[in-house]
Length: 208
Image (cartoon, rainbow, N blue to C red; front, top):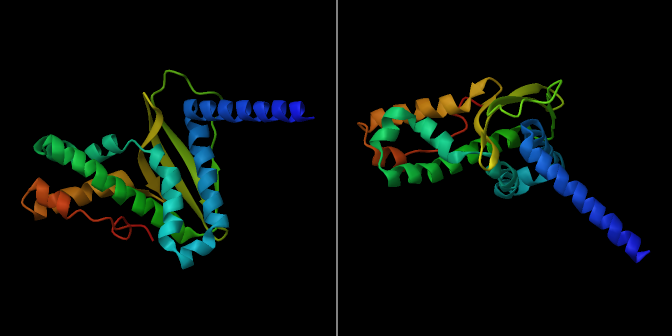
């Protein structure tokens, strides 16, 4: 009996590992599997939103953070002009600053929608292995309303990574880029002051 249990456990591990590998190779499975983890937090940990919001949002961040190519996204938010103006250290600093900004915005947005289900639109056939850029669409259903979510992904040496998100029609990459440009102009294009005064604000991102 013990031998049978060991064999069953070994088979279970092989299945889990195989699914993880396939998820990393398939952008739709990659997004869907992590989305279902987030939906589980939204549904089963909803009381935390009222009792300890930071812990609640951290649970979402733990799932979401490994999915993003923050270096690429942060560079896009800075825009070519300000990216070239910034020093190597300033570019690295903004990656960290922006990471907190984006994670806060995304976690706060999902938290506001509460108990929800998330469904992914899978393609009718397998995608071409040569594709390196793709869009994955989802619908977040709160029970009262449905919200479209679109992820722009790029294949990297570390697998598929998100490079932009559009939530309910709000293009976060473009919104943050416009915010960065406006902030830089307000500080006479002083990159250091712009970075120091960058603030995450989901309201300013047009999300309610």
